[in-house]
Length: 119
Length: 130
Image (tube, rainbow over all chains, first blue to last red; front, side, top):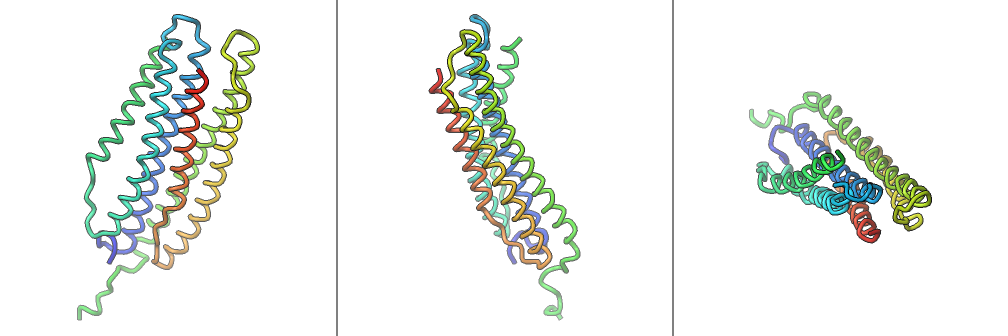
């Protein structure tokens, strides 16, 4: 029997949960891209000397890049979990998840720095 | 004796939860499509706003219609994802009823590809408009 052995219904729900987790990662990537884009474009509108004018562009590029990394990493994570669900044992990969969270953390820290810069 | 024990529990045991999981998955797809739509809308409209502002005061000039093209492509892609995921919802629904669910990957690959390509295009555009 494929899946972790509790019946076809559990395997189906595992796969559907995997899809939802992947989509959640992709959405987070999109949000980082939007924050980066807005930061880069708003920086040009600030008056000279304001922190956002100085740091908005590089921080925006970093946030958008983090978004691309998070969204791209969601695909190998999805395919890996999809294959693992079909096998009898599901071994979580904390290091791979940690790498994703680090990329995400970079984006979030940048977003917070941008919030501070607009004060 | 043991051959009488069914290999799998009857579908009715988890049938309801499978259908609800399928429905949650469709809603996650719709949320993702709406987020992509929002991203496209922001990119398209913000570019327009910046061009207007550049005309009024000394903001850096925006290259015409790059934002609009990226934004429109994102909105179009989000509609495609919403349609594909709805087709998938009904396919999974039928498979759950038959107890023969098969995981797919096409729509997920497409969603990630669209998002990554859009992100790279956005990055290139941000770096090009100094």
